[in-house]
Length: 296
Image (cartoon, rainbow, N blue to C red; front, side, top):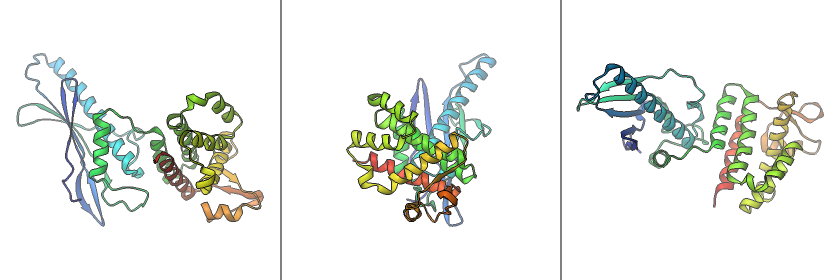
């Protein structure tokens, strides 16, 4: 796909027409960077006689422009899985709302600047192409919220890349729990869920929930992911109880653990400390697992 092929999204909010322009492409080094995403809200202010009322309305439209910018940014991030763009809800960046007039004399409220890549280097990320932009527009037009569990996995990779391993592992674990509640129907088994959480046997519960809801056996078809889940939640529980960010492997598990997560540095008593790379790998494995569970 060449630059400039993505069409703007047109939305209607109350009496406002909102135009969302996809990021514009520009070549940088060996990648094509998309940047300068724009949100336009055109409004005729000539009929508003009071200056204070004009400013009040202007502030309202600035907030709407910013809100749609953040929604669009978040959805592009979600569907491309380009986690290094950062979570716009977590990054406290200064709001830059440009107010100009268009050719019709309307006040134009514009929020811009974002960075995504057409050719991401990471095989676990996707290009911002027409199919992904169509998904973004569909979510915007129909008011769909991003899947929280996918956003949490992206946040986990972002935290891990910054060396915040504990935060990352907690986010990955919460993402799996959130998926269980949202997509596997917690309400149908709430008492069972709460009991398993108390007993710290979430992996067994998750496997059972997937089998019941999707008729898919993780133990049979995703044996590696089953063990990764066990190590993930063992680490999560250690963090929650102030014991550190690690899991243990038994004497007979070392070779297999190295195959699915390695190479590992296994310390005394089978202790394995989680590092940045392993943390990002955990998130990627969980992305793949949830995609598999959700697939038909």
